[in-house]
Image (tube, rainbow, N blue to C red; front, side):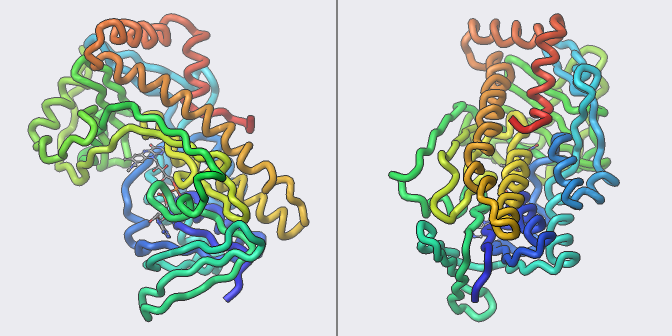
Length: 394
Ligand code: RFL
């Protein structure tokens, strides 16, 4: 079987690339190890930056999002038992969109498979890439229905298989560099079946550790609690979680949190990596396959979309106009935004985690950094720009 592009992974990156290719009638197939139901319900991100929404809209992929997303214009920091509202829209004129990742993935699958007639194969096993450094790469997998190996011949492979995929491992160490950073903290990621307790995102910066509150919908709220890296979620029974959330997000005049059953409870270790370059022969990495940003600054899905716009458009230009400039510049263009977001994520990590670091000096400078956002318009505007993500290409 021959295809122009094989896309590996049906997350935000792979599905967006697939949709861009289908809109230009470029022949492609998307391979995904999980089931359709699984990818459409996997809870993860929820914040989409305005430029990314516009990018989806330009490609005909934002109808449901624009109809259903919440538009946020502010967030609130809570520290020293006080509330500090940070109105980023007033400073920049720009907003955040709150739209749960499973909804976006559902929209993208429907558009790709049901509207644009794209070929997507769920539940495939043991995906392997071959000869990607030649001009005749192949991708093989085991068909779940027959148990037989299947081989796809192609011109390009889009490696969009996330942090635990196989694409990245195909690249020999000598041909790429992987830079890593570990913040040395964990976050207990929680999903509560409870209405949000505020009209905006809340960040609690507390001596016991960071806590976060993010609406996901009218009846679902995501919470985060800083914890030791590698901590066992069993150490966090229901009552302890709510006691810590009340404590760390508590502030004078703040309404109490709405409690509810916790339907997700997992510990995420806060670490980052970046693969450079993101290209190996005919293999192009996109999204978490090429770079991971700890969810501290809610940037991962946005970077995945940025890559997908660049890569999808570049593949279309190559196939339909014989224009290679997009593919040649892909890795560089992606990494500019990746590094900018990594730097901001590190800056935010110091603010969020400094007060609980056990180092009183770091606690002092972290709080000074935070207070500056509420005393200097210049500092606040610079922060707001990075919080919302660069509007234009670098
Ligand atoms: P994904 O979404 O992981 O999709 C990769 C897909 O590839 C499949 N796969 C394979 N398919 C074929 N063959 C293989 N060998 C395969 N191996 C894996 C997987 O099943 C999957 O379907 O990667 P993508 O597309 O790069 O998208 C990245 C985002 O999902 C990720 O960056 C965000 O979820 C990160 N993130 C957040 N990002 C934001 O922008 N804002 C947020 O608020 C935000 N919150 C979060 C987050 C990530 C979290 N977790 C669980 C790590 C909150 C959490 C809790």
